[in-house]
Length: 329
Ligand code: NDP
Image (tube, rainbow, N blue to C red):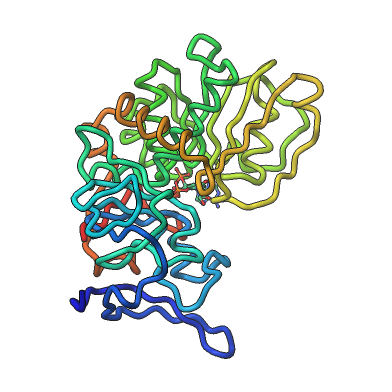
């Protein structure tokens, strides 16, 4: 097909100076893959913000169409699992990092990377969840596997007003957990309570250098911040508890000690969404369909058009985005 479609392309020059342009592409410009998808909705994740602003080395192939997740309809497939007309979701697998991504009218990918759109969910709903929400679900599943169920006590969610945080609060509260939401934006307290937080605490309570052990405050948590915040969260976790670590919005370091692990039997559960095996993804998306209230999804997301992507990318790395952004393509 020779029809053109709009795409965002990040490039860099000989001095490694990055530029971002809107270009016209055709399907012949796309990278290898056995399934072509008409992208109907995508989103702006923190990682997309890093890719577009160049603030961290997310892009590892130049030039590149960024965008780590999308939902859409298969237009062409030579993969056994997919036929024209199928509704699909993609999260990760290096798409938007080393493989042309979501910020284009069409995407061509490996069919093994795709999962079906859950029953009853639109492409727009799926992207209101997006990679951030699917990662929140992976984090909740990790806590459950570790036996951190609602009766074990409160759970903390850091970076609460962000994408991972907002979806984690919604899921955990609908499952019956007592959720403590930690935010740097106190003005977002009503929003967080609306999502299901039982308590809202200030980010400052967790951002100073951590003591090896502090007063036990929660049985588990979902941390999207890292650095001192994760260190404090660990030092405040009660005996036998567990924290799912999925993000680095506050820093990649972990200035902690082994005290929570060896004196309180606390566990640190690592969460990666990018290379998660297909069976895990299918279960996470099934659980999203079952456990996430679609009404809450509309509270925590707003919609922009293709033209708004670069501005939203800048906003998300500056911590200015509340909840999730859906890009209607
Ligand atoms: P958002 O920007 O939407 O949310 C991050 C939140 O963290 C912000 O809203 C803010 O919440 C808080 N925050 C931002 N900067 C700081 C800071 N300097 N110190 C403390 N808190 C801060 O991003 P996402 O929710 O999309 O992603 C969150 C993190 O999770 C990112 O690091 C992202 O890369 C990572 N991630 C990892 C995945 C994986 O596979 N492991 C997949 C998806 C995301 P508030 O204002 O409420 O304090």
